Length: 213
Image (tube, rainbow, N blue to C red; front, side, top):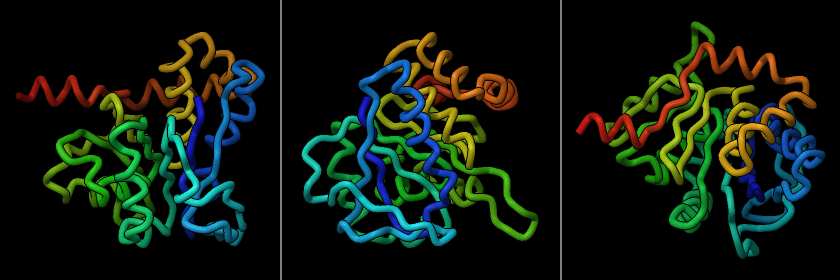
Protein backbone atom coordinates (compact mmCIF):
# COMPACT_ATOMS: atom_id res chain seq x y z
CA UNK A 1 0.00 0.00 0.00
CA UNK A 2 1.31 3.40 -1.02
CA UNK A 3 -0.22 6.50 0.59
CA UNK A 4 -0.23 9.80 -1.28
CA UNK A 5 -0.53 12.29 1.57
CA UNK A 6 -1.96 15.67 0.60
CA UNK A 7 -0.22 18.62 2.27
CA UNK A 8 -1.73 22.07 2.77
CA UNK A 9 -0.99 24.94 5.19
CA UNK A 10 -2.19 24.67 8.81
CA UNK A 11 -2.57 20.89 8.93
CA UNK A 12 -2.68 19.67 12.52
CA UNK A 13 0.69 17.93 13.14
CA UNK A 14 -0.97 14.97 14.87
CA UNK A 15 -2.58 14.20 11.51
CA UNK A 16 0.87 13.14 10.33
CA UNK A 17 0.46 10.00 12.47
CA UNK A 18 -0.50 7.78 9.48
CA UNK A 19 3.04 8.29 8.21
CA UNK A 20 4.33 6.95 11.52
CA UNK A 21 2.04 3.94 11.22
CA UNK A 22 3.51 3.21 7.79
CA UNK A 23 7.03 3.65 9.12
CA UNK A 24 6.48 1.23 12.00
CA UNK A 25 4.39 -1.01 9.77
CA UNK A 26 7.27 -1.63 7.37
CA UNK A 27 8.65 -4.00 10.00
CA UNK A 28 5.67 -6.25 9.26
CA UNK A 29 4.84 -5.21 5.68
CA UNK A 30 8.01 -3.94 3.95
CA UNK A 31 6.06 -2.68 0.92
CA UNK A 32 4.23 0.03 2.90
CA UNK A 33 5.18 3.51 1.76
CA UNK A 34 4.07 7.09 1.24
CA UNK A 35 4.71 10.29 -0.65
CA UNK A 36 3.88 13.85 0.41
CA UNK A 37 2.32 16.03 -2.28
CA UNK A 38 1.50 19.73 -2.57
CA UNK A 39 1.02 22.28 -5.37
CA UNK A 40 4.73 23.24 -5.19
CA UNK A 41 7.88 21.91 -3.58
CA UNK A 42 8.01 24.80 -1.11
CA UNK A 43 7.90 23.88 2.61
CA UNK A 44 4.34 23.63 3.95
CA UNK A 45 3.82 25.28 7.34
CA UNK A 46 1.64 23.28 9.73
CA UNK A 47 -0.56 24.72 12.47
CA UNK A 48 2.23 24.74 15.08
CA UNK A 49 4.84 26.25 12.76
CA UNK A 50 6.45 22.95 11.80
CA UNK A 51 7.50 22.99 8.15
CA UNK A 52 7.22 19.86 6.03
CA UNK A 53 8.76 19.34 2.61
CA UNK A 54 6.66 17.74 -0.14
CA UNK A 55 8.20 14.89 -2.11
CA UNK A 56 6.50 15.97 -5.34
CA UNK A 57 4.02 18.42 -6.81
CA UNK A 58 0.49 17.69 -7.96
CA UNK A 59 1.66 17.79 -11.57
CA UNK A 60 4.44 15.28 -10.92
CA UNK A 61 2.18 12.58 -9.47
CA UNK A 62 1.81 9.73 -11.95
CA UNK A 63 -0.06 7.15 -9.88
CA UNK A 64 -2.12 7.13 -6.69
CA UNK A 65 -3.00 4.03 -4.69
CA UNK A 66 -4.44 5.64 -1.54
CA UNK A 67 -5.04 9.40 -1.44
CA UNK A 68 -5.09 10.58 2.17
CA UNK A 69 -6.52 14.01 3.00
CA UNK A 70 -5.74 15.21 6.55
CA UNK A 71 -7.40 17.80 8.76
CA UNK A 72 -6.44 20.92 10.62
CA UNK A 73 -7.31 24.57 11.00
CA UNK A 74 -6.39 25.15 7.35
CA UNK A 75 -9.10 22.82 6.04
CA UNK A 76 -11.51 25.68 5.29
CA UNK A 77 -8.99 27.38 3.02
CA UNK A 78 -8.00 24.06 1.45
CA UNK A 79 -11.68 23.38 0.73
CA UNK A 80 -11.74 26.57 -1.35
CA UNK A 81 -8.45 26.01 -3.17
CA UNK A 82 -9.03 25.08 -6.84
CA UNK A 83 -5.69 23.28 -7.19
CA UNK A 84 -6.34 21.08 -4.16
CA UNK A 85 -9.91 20.27 -5.19
CA UNK A 86 -8.90 19.55 -8.78
CA UNK A 87 -6.17 17.17 -7.57
CA UNK A 88 -8.66 15.24 -5.44
CA UNK A 89 -11.19 15.07 -8.28
CA UNK A 90 -8.49 13.94 -10.69
CA UNK A 91 -7.66 10.83 -8.67
CA UNK A 92 -11.01 10.07 -7.01
CA UNK A 93 -12.25 7.83 -9.85
CA UNK A 94 -9.30 5.42 -9.59
CA UNK A 95 -7.72 5.74 -6.13
CA UNK A 96 -8.98 4.84 -2.69
CA UNK A 97 -9.71 8.27 -1.20
CA UNK A 98 -9.42 8.61 2.57
CA UNK A 99 -9.98 11.54 4.90
CA UNK A 100 -8.92 11.83 8.51
CA UNK A 101 -10.33 14.34 10.97
CA UNK A 102 -11.61 17.49 9.23
CA UNK A 103 -10.18 16.35 5.91
CA UNK A 104 -13.73 15.13 5.27
CA UNK A 105 -14.78 18.77 4.82
CA UNK A 106 -12.31 19.04 1.96
CA UNK A 107 -13.64 15.87 0.34
CA UNK A 108 -17.14 17.29 0.74
CA UNK A 109 -16.10 20.47 -1.06
CA UNK A 110 -14.63 18.38 -3.88
CA UNK A 111 -17.96 16.57 -4.26
CA UNK A 112 -16.40 13.20 -3.43
CA UNK A 113 -18.84 12.54 -0.58
CA UNK A 114 -22.04 13.33 -2.49
CA UNK A 115 -24.56 10.52 -2.04
CA UNK A 116 -22.40 8.84 0.60
CA UNK A 117 -22.29 8.44 4.35
CA UNK A 118 -19.34 10.11 6.09
CA UNK A 119 -17.85 11.01 9.44
CA UNK A 120 -15.33 13.53 10.71
CA UNK A 121 -14.11 15.04 13.96
CA UNK A 122 -16.86 15.25 16.61
CA UNK A 123 -15.45 16.48 19.90
CA UNK A 124 -14.55 20.16 20.31
CA UNK A 125 -14.38 22.78 23.05
CA UNK A 126 -17.66 24.30 24.18
CA UNK A 127 -16.90 27.50 22.30
CA UNK A 128 -16.28 25.70 18.99
CA UNK A 129 -18.57 24.24 16.34
CA UNK A 130 -18.27 20.50 15.83
CA UNK A 131 -17.00 19.65 12.33
CA UNK A 132 -19.57 16.83 12.26
CA UNK A 133 -22.33 19.42 12.69
CA UNK A 134 -20.81 21.40 9.82
CA UNK A 135 -20.79 18.29 7.64
CA UNK A 136 -24.44 17.65 8.52
CA UNK A 137 -25.36 20.93 6.86
CA UNK A 138 -24.56 19.38 3.46
CA UNK A 139 -27.80 17.70 2.30
CA UNK A 140 -25.92 15.53 -0.19
CA UNK A 141 -24.05 13.71 2.61
CA UNK A 142 -25.39 11.35 5.28
CA UNK A 143 -23.28 12.27 8.31
CA UNK A 144 -22.73 9.92 11.23
CA UNK A 145 -20.63 9.84 14.40
CA UNK A 146 -18.31 6.88 13.88
CA UNK A 147 -14.79 5.59 14.18
CA UNK A 148 -14.80 5.52 10.38
CA UNK A 149 -17.21 5.06 7.50
CA UNK A 150 -16.21 2.75 4.65
CA UNK A 151 -17.92 3.42 1.32
CA UNK A 152 -15.61 1.13 -0.60
CA UNK A 153 -13.41 3.50 -2.60
CA UNK A 154 -14.07 6.41 -0.22
CA UNK A 155 -13.34 6.17 3.50
CA UNK A 156 -13.77 8.90 6.10
CA UNK A 157 -12.14 8.62 9.50
CA UNK A 158 -12.96 10.25 12.81
CA UNK A 159 -11.05 12.97 14.59
CA UNK A 160 -7.49 13.53 15.73
CA UNK A 161 -5.79 10.29 16.94
CA UNK A 162 -8.41 8.16 15.20
CA UNK A 163 -6.25 8.72 12.12
CA UNK A 164 -4.11 5.90 13.54
CA UNK A 165 -7.13 3.58 13.68
CA UNK A 166 -8.09 4.55 10.14
CA UNK A 167 -4.60 3.74 8.85
CA UNK A 168 -4.62 0.38 10.63
CA UNK A 169 -8.05 -0.28 9.10
CA UNK A 170 -6.63 0.39 5.63
CA UNK A 171 -3.81 -2.03 6.35
CA UNK A 172 -6.24 -4.67 7.62
CA UNK A 173 -8.43 -4.25 4.55
CA UNK A 174 -5.44 -4.75 2.26
CA UNK A 175 -3.27 -7.25 4.17
CA UNK A 176 -5.58 -8.89 6.70
CA UNK A 177 -6.42 -8.61 10.38
CA UNK A 178 -3.30 -10.36 11.62
CA UNK A 179 -0.96 -7.89 9.89
CA UNK A 180 -2.83 -4.92 11.35
CA UNK A 181 -2.85 -6.55 14.77
CA UNK A 182 0.91 -7.09 14.72
CA UNK A 183 1.56 -3.50 13.68
CA UNK A 184 -0.75 -2.15 16.41
CA UNK A 185 1.05 -4.36 18.91
CA UNK A 186 4.56 -3.25 17.93
CA UNK A 187 3.32 0.37 18.11
CA UNK A 188 1.92 -0.39 21.61
CA UNK A 189 -1.43 0.87 20.31
CA UNK A 190 -3.39 -2.37 20.56
CA UNK A 191 -5.19 -1.44 23.79
CA UNK A 192 -6.13 2.02 22.49
CA UNK A 193 -7.34 0.49 19.23
CA UNK A 194 -9.58 -1.96 21.10
CA UNK A 195 -10.95 0.84 23.29
CA UNK A 196 -11.76 3.03 20.29
CA UNK A 197 -13.47 0.14 18.51
CA UNK A 198 -15.59 -0.45 21.62
CA UNK A 199 -16.77 3.15 21.92
CA UNK A 200 -17.34 4.03 18.25
CA UNK A 201 -18.76 2.01 15.36
CA UNK A 202 -17.03 1.18 12.11
CA UNK A 203 -19.77 1.72 9.56
CA UNK A 204 -20.24 0.31 6.06
CA UNK A 205 -21.71 3.33 4.33
CA UNK A 206 -22.76 1.25 1.35
CA UNK A 207 -24.76 -1.17 3.52
CA UNK A 208 -26.48 1.58 5.51
CA UNK A 209 -27.46 3.60 2.46
CA UNK A 210 -28.70 0.51 0.64
CA UNK A 211 -30.85 -0.44 3.63
CA UNK A 212 -32.30 3.08 3.72
CA UNK A 213 -33.53 2.64 0.15
